[in-house]
Image 1 (cartoon, helix red, strand yellow):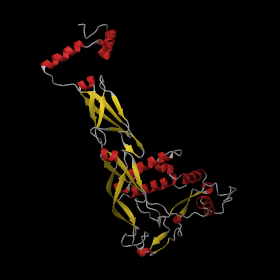
Image 2 (cartoon, one colour):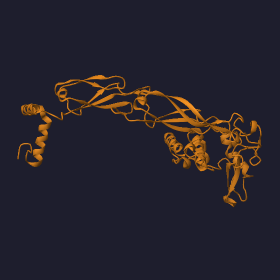
Image 3 (cartoon, one colour):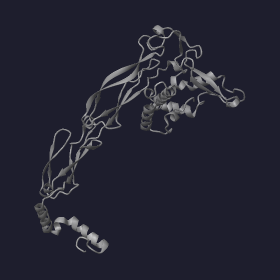
Image 4 (tube, helix red, strand yellow):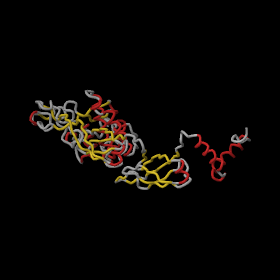
Length: 378
């Protein structure tokens, strides 16, 4: 096995599909060629990451790959008995091993690989994310060159079969020697795995087979988008280099904070000040929602920090409907006249013990802790 896809993605062999997807997204952001222009090592790493994800993200391909990883010669049908034993030559060995993938011989050049994915991040206001919106984005992607039909050769025909790999796109390399000799299959260094070599390059794309273009796209963002969530636009990534489907565009969201609302999932949270009079005698207050104010009745004797739930007034999404949680706090006046201070003092003196049960319970606990009542004892 030439490559260990688990090591390339940095995941355990027992990793779940969600873990593989999450790690792949992190690596795409880290090694995307657009972030490292003209860095061939990063481009090669990015290609490896996509190749590994293509296999490990598909349960059937992953099962076949795991079998091959654990049993590299399980299908070869021979045993060592001195010299080469049951193996007539290396091509027989690998013809048997890879027949499980194709039902016969294995030809890398005939397997059309999808183009690489592109990841972009867009910033949304809190309200746009909560209610849904449409955004126009512009990004760079590769498209198959129309002049050479993606071949890189002039007029799409000026190429020949690679004489190194004979059109297979791969070569075999022997490693070690004697009894420990093994063989691995690697991409043909001359044709890059295409199985073809260009006689005369296409003048429009310089022999690459693709061109980089600016693409503008309208994205419909559903209600309920949150930081870290994303949508995938299939086929809007980079073009394939050997006639396969284009990669995907992965649009991730970053949502800005709001001055009033906080959110958790589809639920919204808001803190609302109320007057001392409303807390004591009851009243109605206007509560902000995503659409219009909601009138909430405050019962008499409401304590600061009391939470009310307004059902169905959170985020309304096709994936679920949230609630609005309102926490009220009593706003204490900061400037009082002498007469107002006198009235408040008289009012406090006139209160019965039962009317301030929590305060009196607190005083009793203080007294039991220190043996004195700091509110009355000097």
